[in-house]
Each structure stands twice: as structure tokens, then as C-alpha cells.
Image (cartoon, rainbow, N blue to C red; front, side, top):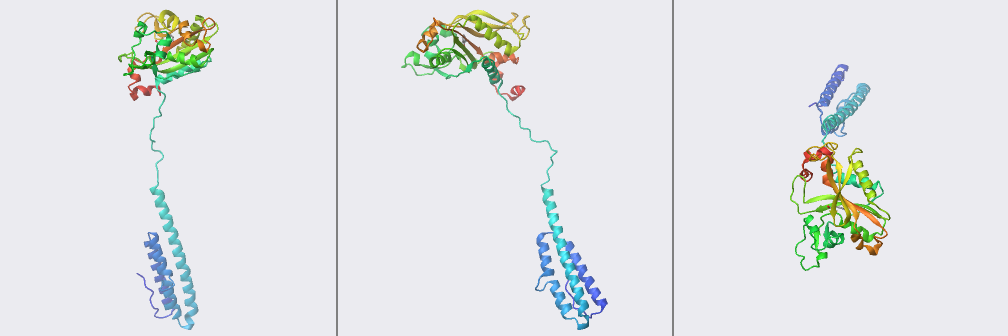
Length: 367
Ligand code: PHE
């Protein structure tokens, strides 16, 4: 480490040498500096008022100089002071810059790397089809209603003209809530087997005219197979007004099927039975796979059965007569369709179970 020497004499030569040695030491010390604290130690070593190198130079060279040399030594000492200050300043700048460089380097980030792919969820195909069906009827001026999934015998059956113990009840294998034997039959709870109870619930609170669609979940004690599930979805429809005819029913459903399956699809109405409609029909659409030619899917008939419908039975209006439903003045039609059944056809899905298994490989196809 450099220490300030005493000058042996004050000749130009001796002064030059002393100055050269000091500057060489200054230079080599600046090159050793790495950190901010190195720099502070260095700065204090050279600049400290008490015993810093410059102070020593001042004391040992200038103060000790004989009068004739004072002027020259003073000039050199001043020059040294300027050089030292400049060196300290420059070293500070370098250290600062290199630590900023280090920080930038450590924060370096490769923006060309591929990002983390987060797949975005979409609506389940069953809900999507349900929304689509509802939208078709909304466009025709229908409103949308809902009702409870746990229903009473009264709404699910009795008020829909299924009298107690009537064999028509057997067509809908029902899941009953246990332990209700003490209750009157009509108050006993069950999982609704269809969305039709919401017809009555709607008419109880809204006098005619009514045009409503009711999407919802229903339950039946059916074993799971390729086309049946104990839990499935329906969209119910009800229109009540003066002068509603079977023609209105046919025209409305024909339009809805064309909106759902494309304008080339045909509909036909086949006699059927439901206790709450009279007359009743099963509506069939021309096979969407073969266009009506006959194929395996339509069992070579050219037609696929899709929904139940009919004119509201006057016996049903009897249950809501107090709210303006007088069957001598008004009439109406109703229909109910299975959402999964339509989704199976629309997307050509092999088995209804695929809708409930939650297999992402299946569901991804609808994204
Ligand atoms: N509720 C009937 C069913 O689930 C369908 C239906 C609704 C039939 C409305 C006629 C009128 O099978």
C-alpha cells in the first residue's frame, strides 16, 4: 500500500518522481475497486482531512518545503488534489454503472419463451343447447320461467290431470323423498319428473295470455344407458291465449326445429297421449343424418321422435280457473323437449353418458 514519502530534496527531478509514484498508486488502487464500500474506503484514504493521503502530501511536501520551492510545490499539490478528486469521482461512476448493469442482467427476461397456456372454459354442450332452444323461443316473444326441482305430488301429477293411482303415473318412474307417509298425498315431495309442473305454477301467478319457456333439470328412476340418464334436462313451453289452435302449435314447433337443425328439416305430428294435453302428439323431425332417406340412426324410418306436445287439456285449466283460465274462452298448447336428446342429435354424440363424465377430451371439442 502506498505511503507518502518524505522528499529528500526539492529538485524538479525529485518532485517529478514523487508525483509519478503517487499517481501510479492512485491508478492501481482505483483498478482494485469493486463495491461501493471499497470505494468509500478508498475515498476516505485519499481525502480524509485527518491523515488522508492528500493531507499527508500537504503536510510532508508543502509545509516542509523551503521558501524558494513553496510556489512550485504548491502548484503541484493543487494539481494532485484535482487529479485525486477526479479519480475518486470517476471510480464512483464506474462502480455505480456496473452495479446497475448487474441488476439489469439479473432481471433479464426472455420474452420469446412461450407463455403458460391457460385454457378458458366454455359452456357445457347441454347448457349450450338449452340456451339455444330458449333463445329460439325468446325471439318469438316467449318469456323464460323456472320452478323447483323438488316438487309436490300436486304440481308434478295431480294438477296435470294425473289422478292419484292413475296408471299414467307409471310412465314416469319417480324418485320420491322418503318418510312422508303422514302427509296428505298431494303434499308429498318428489324430484320432478318433468318441467310440466311449472305450467301450473306459471298460470297460478299470471293470468292469460301466457307465452313462456321453462328450462330445467328433471329426474327419473331410469338406469343409465346410451340414451337414458336418471338426471336430465327439459325445456317446457306453454302458450295460452284466445283462439290458440293446433295449427299454432305446429307452426311454432316447425319454426323452432328449423331454427335448431337447419331449414331443410321437416316435422310431423304423431298421435300420442299425455294426461295434461288433449289432443296429444309426439313430434318427429326428418332424420338429420340421412335427410329422411332411412338409415341406422332413424331405424330406417326417415323420422326421429323428438318431443311431446298437445293442446292444454281443459281439466288442467280447471286447477287455475280462479286466475282467469276459463276453457270456454281461452285455449293453449304445451310442449316439452329433452335437451340431451337434441344435443345428442345436433352434435352426433354416441352416448348421453359422455355429457356427464366430465372428460376434458370430450368437452374440449365444444370449446
Ligand atoms: N312432460 C312431458 C314429458 O316429460 C312432455 C310434454 C310436455 C308433453 C308438454 C306434452 C306437453 O314427457
